[in-house]
Structures are given as structure tokens and as C-alpha cells.
Amino acid sequence: MTDASKLEAFMDKVPDNVWVVVDEAYAQFADHLSLANFIRYIGKKRVMVVRTFSKFYGLAGARLGYVLSDPEAIQAYDTVTEPFNTNRTAIAGAAAAMQFDKAEIDKTRKKILGDREGLVESLGLLGFTVAPSQANFVFAKLPDGAPDATQVVDDLMKQGVIIRDCTPWGYPHHIRVTVGTHKELEFFLSKLTAVLSH
Image (tube, rainbow, N blue to C red):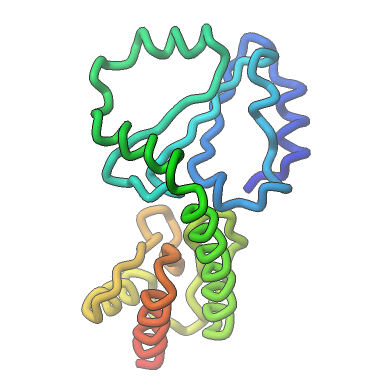
């Protein structure tokens, strides 16, 4: 996550004719005190804040996102988007999540953040170098002497564990692990320990 003060300094210097599009797909998993507040620029700068229901609200299959911006920008956006770009089921799911799931969402957020912290600690004990995370996943460098990420990911897949090999992104010794349930993380860590020990 980019430092909020650096982002604010950037916004102060952005010319009025330049649009800034901010991707906040993982904002709900972040430390809210560290997040830059881009919403306060709406109406003052050309800014669009893009968010999604796919991550925090667990509606990945719904493929539903939204934009926060000034009314003129939203109207311009609406004129270039395809009609029927979402469906009623996705909208109903998002509305229900926001209306009825507040307590469950807060509980789940605390659980994910706690499990993320535990995952970072466990990977550290296995010799991984883990990047600070403000999302629902961690990005970690394999321990020295371990096989490359492709081999580790393939070996884990044979054990019933799916994680992301970061080789296509230019990080052949890094993996990305989504914070699942506590039971799933325990299963992953046990299989990872076995794979690394071989």
C-alpha cells in the first residue's frame, strides 16, 4: 500500500486536467488509519475511486464493481459502458450483503486479518520473507535453497493445495497465498512444510 502522505502530495500536484483512477479493490482489508482518503477529492479533482464486491464481500462470481466520482464523471462513464453490463442477481447479492450482512462482514474481516497475521508468522518460521500485506493474500519469497515457485506450486497442487506461482510476474521464487479459512491455512501449512522438507 502506498503511503497516504505521498499520495496526498501527489494529488496536490496533479494538474486539474488529469484524471486519477484509484483501485481500492482491497481497501476493506487494509489498515484504515493508513489509507489515503481519495473520496475527499471528489468534486475538487478529477478522481474516480474504483471498488468491487468481488473481494471483501465474497461475490467474486458476480463480477460486480462500482465507481465513486462526481456526477458529471459518472454520467460520462455511463454513456460509454455497455448496456446490461451487470445482472439482477449480482445487484441483489450486493444489496443484500450491504443491507443484511454487516455483522457477519465485520466478524469475517477480523478473522481474515487475524489469520493473515498468523500466516505471515508461520511462513516466517519456515524461512520465507513475506511482504507487508494490506489485502486478503500474502506475497512471499521462498526460503533460500528451496525449489523455484513453479516446482513448489506444482508439488502443492498434487497435495490438493492451489496457490499462485508468481513466475509469470517476474518473481520465480515467490508465491501468493490467499487467506482462506483457518482450517484451510492449517492444511496448506502442513502440506507446504512437507513439500519443503523434500
